[in-house]
Image 1 (tube, rainbow, N blue to C red):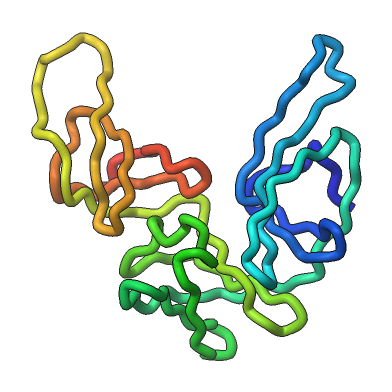
Image 2 (spheres, rainbow, N blue to C red; image 1 turned 45 degrees about the horizontal axis):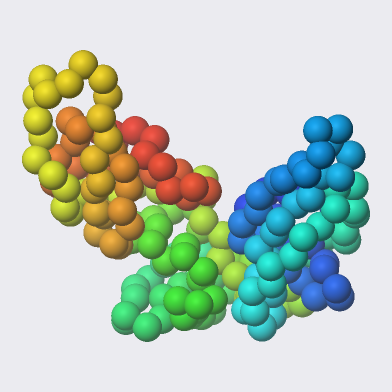
Length: 189
């Protein structure tokens, strides 16, 4: 059983009889006592791809989705679909932009650590590793000594993801990005 205090992005649960994955959530406590904590969730149905915005009270319990995970590889994107291969069965499968729900921005050539999520033998989702390495393709020029405080500037990666990065980074450098919230982790040597 999964309780609301175990909610995080990527957790799969049964909600209203359907397998769902938590795409996003926020926690709000309407009173100072905290007895009525509410989790405002954005759930994506793993079978239909439908997005549900639901408010769930603290303390509710949900069944876990009976699923298995296989290692997977990203092959290519044709602009409308992203194509993958199951590394165990060598089956190829694809998802469109809507089914990926924003994770397509973290996909690039050579990405490692992908997992295909199977429910009843059918691949319904793809899971990203916690961080990915990407190349900066566009950013403002480096300004040395402009300020005593750390400044962030927007940088665009090869997949189109815009990440706030430190001002010392320049075009062509490799960076590591957190896939949970899209923030810069470190420069890759």
